[in-house]
Length: 302
Ligand SMILES: [Zn+2]
Image (cartoon, rainbow, N blue to C red; front, top):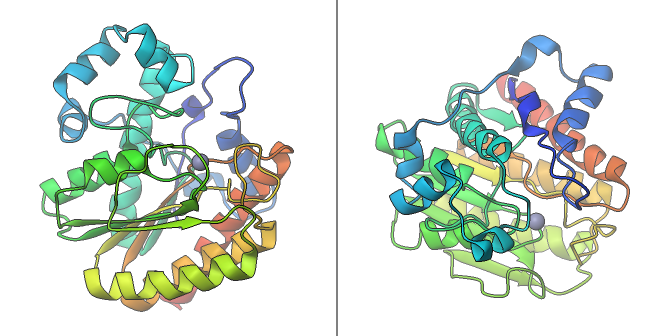
């Protein structure tokens, strides 16, 4: 299985709860333990302007390109804007497009990046400048590679940007399972939104996921699923309030891969959030997802 990754994702944003070093650390741990070889890694190319423009408005893209965001827009972003951040996010959009294409070819592909689901067409917020999953979905729909896509968003935070972007189109189904009492305050309706109680346990979470995911995939029949495998439903996450364990999150990932496999849908995974008190836990949760993806991919080909 190929894995999309770039060292340029490690943007210096100063002291911050968002550990941009996680992308490199996940890659290094997986290479060190033999899960991945360096030759499995694919370097992305930046998304083209036309790709970004299928999701984001010309006005917003102009502000990003010319560093012309207002003070309010910078505040809303909650990470310091810089040309380095902009270039990393454009590269990341290209990475998720690449991940989607490789997933369709190989059944599963992981992007060690992406999942910036709080970015809207007109603005960024909550650490998210550009909505890479929306950009990738629209790119693959536009060139006819796919006709039906599902976004399965299991980050602890609701995928507000993604839900708003795809509110009016039947080609992309959006499913979000998140903590109800958490950011964002306003949660635009997706096709299926499950707001969970604080402290929700592994068993309750996995039961709800199993109950909802299979029927959604059955009804929508997506050729490709973009899976946002956020590590922040973890019980020791600084920005999350659910009660999942590291093992529970691994079972979650396995459940998603198996459900998609049963429906014949390819899966393109992005990392999304993860802010555990111990960054090592966030790394382990993301690494376990990759281990499950590889297990699933090797079973499909054997
Ligand atoms: Zn999150």
